[in-house]
Image (cartoon, rainbow, N blue to C red; front, top):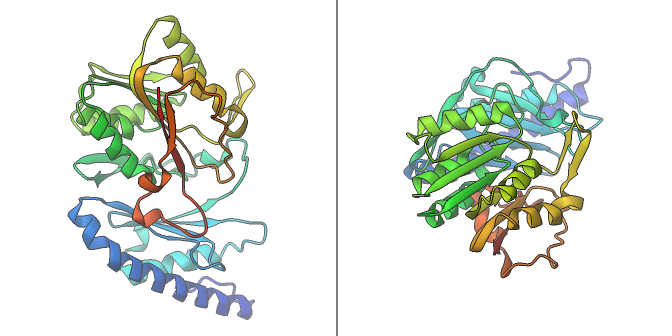
Length: 326
């Protein structure tokens, strides 16, 4: 399938070269990873992330589907991404209806980065170890599962037994499912998005997690933390993985992780029991931690333990993560 502009022979040749290079790289990576992840029952993993400088793309495998995104810039040509998608799909034997093409844009997008790109309302089920999650690669830039945190989720599961667990900015509740399956006494999942909370409820039902003791709360993070503090609600274990930027249109309040993370962590500490643990994470590429003034027993960066093999990249660190002992 050739999609390069017919009136631009130079671009057509360049597109064909890029597509062949990308398909070759992805096919080798798939062969290296697929069997091992299949043994671990992991359906979602990364195959490529801008490994070749001139091919600004990311390719993820979703159990027989491909999600292929371009890191867009002003000179992006609309025909480039479809040709990459078609060639990679052919190399892996994936039908074109299972190929999902997206654009990723860097920086502050005023909320547009996570807007819907379609309205199919379709979801499919993928496995991660012995849990299952709904994903939607059709309608959103982000599909509902951040696979780069699968190691962190396992850490939470291993620590969750008998604990009261807080999942702030819970998104689709995957950390909460792991905590519940790890024997948490309770889980509390908080997100400002009604869609995310509904999705988290579906994931819990899918994994046979009862409603009792597993609260799903639609609220802004700081509002929830203030209310929890007033009502003396406390936790032993927490995951805090906020967006880099967000804006509350109703109250015209914005959140910037570079500026606001010390205040956020401090607010979480006020609802934690002594000896508790907070996992704090961010995917902000220029994040500079300012945690030295926090009143805690210890802080350790554990990024090297939380990033899975398929997300290790020379170009960027997909996320950073700290373990904070209260």
